[in-house]
Image (cartoon, rainbow, N blue to C red):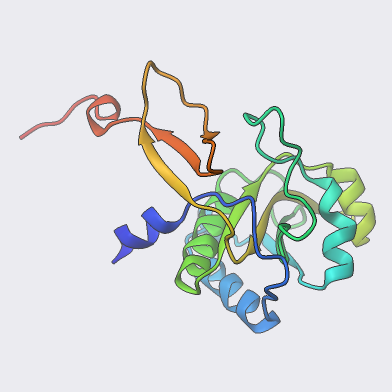
Length: 191
């Protein structure tokens, strides 16, 4: 069921780094994104796949991890992603891309969950450094990166208390993500 996939699709930031993700699996995930909706059906997205250890290590410093966890600078060696999908906007097709990359990222992550994987959408990127490391053509704008791997952490959903939306980790390393209630987010309905 789609509900089960969505509830299992949490933001994971620690992985079994030694678990390799095959290129064909990554291509299948991108195919899900390719078949998802696109504004005006322009399909301006392109994808850069990284799944080799050397390049993963090289690009890892380009990303910021978990802004609410002030005493944590990201996954340690051995817990880092084993693959990345960098979502690019082809500015020759469309200069400014509004939502396509969000739709594509969700499709990729739902597909990853179905494969027993997990991921993290990363928007806090040193784009210039990443662009140079990957030798990307200037027509490509880095929109979002999806870090992927076999999850090495438990992520649970909690109810928001006192209006605090900040995620946190407990003494056992369980990652807690507060969510607003349905009552709070539905502002009107008609019978």
